[in-house]
Amino acid sequence: MSAAATDRALRDAFGCFATGVTLVTTHWNGQDWGMTCSSFNAVSLDPALVLWNIRHNATSHQAFVHGGGYTVSVLGSEHQELAQAFARGTQAERFAAGEFVRLDSQRLKLASALAWFDCKLYQTVQAGDHDILLGQIEHYGSRPGKGLVFERGQFAVDTLETGAASTSPF
Image 1 (tube, rainbow, N blue to C red):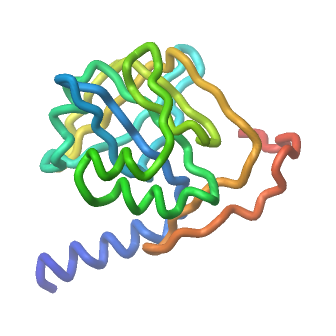
Image 2 (image 1 turned 120 degrees about the vertical axis):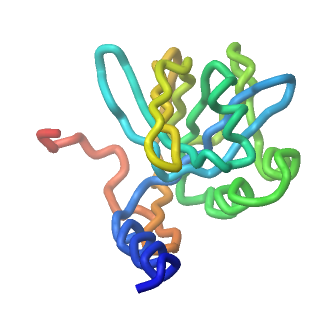
């Protein structure tokens, strides 16, 4: 099997795992940087930590690694076009596609995000062709709504009841 076929097969296998969709932003050298991200995850409650990862060859890699922190905006079902806009185009085109609020950290959060987490960079871990960026949450918020999901290269909407009390032991 060729390396390209193996890479494609591995990507297809990874795609079987449904994830939420987020926008991750930072402010570095006087410019706003942002991208779509599906690798976001909670890490710890004490201290409050989250993580996501970025490819070493991403155009915004330096900004996120050296920007001192990042803001994660969790996307709702109404944000599919915004998720696509942040996956391509210039930084200016990406931010023009939505309404954002500048936080005290100077980073931007999506005004209509389901949840948001403003984080200072806690640790960067090199992992293969990516860096894992751990962030310590400094401020956050949330609102009711349906989350945007990504699975097998397609967007979907979660079917969970909004506002229902959690019964999960996790």
